[in-house]
Structures are given as structure tokens and as C-alpha cells.
Image 1: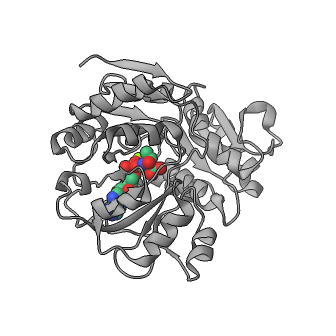
Image 2 (image 1 turned 90 degrees about the vertical axis):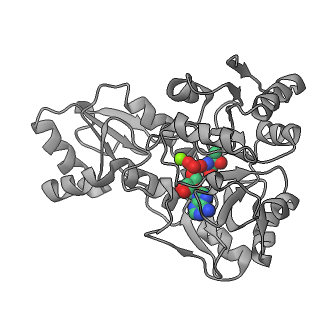
Amino acid sequence: MKRKVFQVKTNKNEEIAAAADVLRSGGLVAFPTETVYGLGADASNAQAVNRIFIAKGRPTDHPLIVHIGKKENLNVWSSNIPSRAWLLAEHFWPGPLTLILRKADWVPEVVTGGLNTIGLRVPAHPLALSLLKSLGGGIAAPSANRFGRVSPTTSNHVREELGDCVDFILDGGACSVGIESTIVDLSSGSPVILRPGGVTQESLEEVLGEPVVQRKNSKVRCSGRHSVHYSPDVRVVLAEEEKVDEVISRFLSDNFRVGLMSSKRLSKKINDVTFIDLAATIKDQAQQLYAKLRMADTLNLDILVVVPPVGSGLEVAINDRLVRAAGQRDEKLRKDIL
Ligand code: TXA
Ligand code: MG
């Protein structure tokens, strides 16, 4: 199959139709969503979906999200749909929310990693919606990065990571949300957040009129739940604002090349480090986070010290990603330093 990369800023029908044809013939199409770029296959084609796992190097028991064009299609992909699901779909779709529901019997097991539940969402990006409409089906798509790596928020990131394995890349510019969807499990009674993301806990609770809890340790094989994930090459160390100077001094005294990623030029040592400005507003921080982690990898640093934002909205999702970017390596360093 011929590989093509299209720069599509508006909905050009022929290009979308060509991408849909690639999906129909079992190929992989990377496409923009409002959260991150997805690596898509026709969700009804088990063989095509299998190619996603190979391209990403992802274990096959990790379930995928199926993207659908409209909420009415929930009935096609899932069964026993609770009223909460319709309520959330009504409020947040198209948008950065994935609902975990009982899967319909016909859905290939490879999509759900053998689970009897399925993750579904309607993405809020015009290109994704046009592609879904043109295909007339569902697109199984994880983030278009290699397993464990930082998710792509531009088509160039996709090309860098998966250029050899993808048949077609649709370019819709930089993703507007920048971090992945919030995943809410509705398959067993009360709603549980499996992954914080673009829709906050507060807004879910407001719509549902009931508490929504965050699950800390999911038993489900949830790729974004691994303790080292969303990981750049550079070693990431998290530091609270008050500890930044202490942490940086320690690394500088070991002759490390140190980067500081933060929303303010916090440190007295600012002239001895490479400063990466993590935007002023929380929305911009989310939108730019992954691109900046990728950028940090190009700066020849030994250590990237990151000051995570403090707060209970989008901050929760950003913190979640940063803790995973730092991974267990950070826990060891914390013991060493603090
Ligand atoms: O924003 C997003 O959600 C992006 C865009 C492309 O839509 N997709 C994304 O996919 O982040 P991925 O595969 O990187 O992460 C999806 C997460 C995984 O951690 C997976 O385990 C979880 O969703 N998931 C999918 N189906 C599930 C299920 N039935 N039960 C529990 N978790 C599930
Ligand atoms: Mg991912």
C-alpha cells in the first residue's frame, strides 16, 4: 500500500475518502483528534486491528478505544447501556471523554483485549468526524506513539515515531486539548475515573449529580496506567516549587546538564539550567505538555526537573502524566534527594 501524508486543514472530501478507503482495505490511518493523534484501524476488522499492536509494540491484551461518529451509534458497539452513559454522551460528546460500557457480542475480541467491556468516544475534531462519516463505521485507535512513549499532538510527531508503519497520516494541525481523554467506567454501577483527562472530575459530577471517584490502581490492563508511561528519553524528576533550588543544586553539583520545565522562572539557578516555559494557563499547559517533553529530548539534557501544577481540575490529568513520565525512577531519586 502506498504511504501518503496529507496536509489537510479543511475537510477535503477526496483526501478523507482516500483515508477511509485505506481503513476499508485493512490499513492504518493516523488522524487528529482534539486530544492527541490516534493510530486508527477499522474496528470491525480484527486483522487490521492486529496491525495496530504490531506498529505500536503494544501488548495485545491492552484494550483499544473505539471512536464513533455520533452518540446514537453507542447501541451498535455496546449493550446494557445505562442512562448515565446517555447523559454524559449528551453533555460531553463530541469531546475528550471515553465511556467504558458492556461490549456488543459481535465486536472482535482483539479490540477489547479479551474484555467484555469496550471503550467508546466521539472525538471533537472535524477531520476525525469526517473520516468516521466517510468510513461509516468505528475506528479503533490508541494514541499514535510507540508503546510507553509520549503521545503525539502533531502529525510530525506521528511521522517521527511511526512513519514506517502507518499507511496514511491526516494532518489536522496541533491538537487543541493536548492530553488524552478522561476514561470513565460505567460498566459496573457507580462511575469510576480510570484515567484523568480532558474532562474534569468536577464537571462529570456536576452533570451526573453524584460523586465520581478516581480509581488509583486499576486491575484492567490499561496502557496509560503503567507506572512508567508517557515517557521521554530524558530522565524526568518532579519537584515542588519550594524544593526546586535544592533539587537543581544537587544535580548541578554532580555536573549534570539540567533542564527546568515550569510555568515560572522559579529557580535562583535559572542561568545555570535550560529553561522550558510550561505556559501560563492550565489549558495551555495541557495543550503544550507533550510537545515540550519531546522538545526536551532534543536539548541534550541529563535531567529534566519539572514543577507540576497544583490544583484539582485539568491539573490532575497533567500531574498524572508527569508522574508517569518520571515513573519509578523518580521515587528512587526522591529518596536520594529529599
Ligand atoms: O484521547 C484519547 O483517549 C486518545 C485518542 C486517540 O482518542 N486515545 C488514547 O488511546 O489515549 P490509548 O490506547 O493510548 O489509551 C486508551 C486507554 C488505555 O489505557 C486502555 O487500556 C483503556 O483506554 N481502555 C480501553 N478500553 C478499555 C476497557 N474496556 N476497559 C478499561 N480500559 C480500557
Ligand atoms: Mg496511549
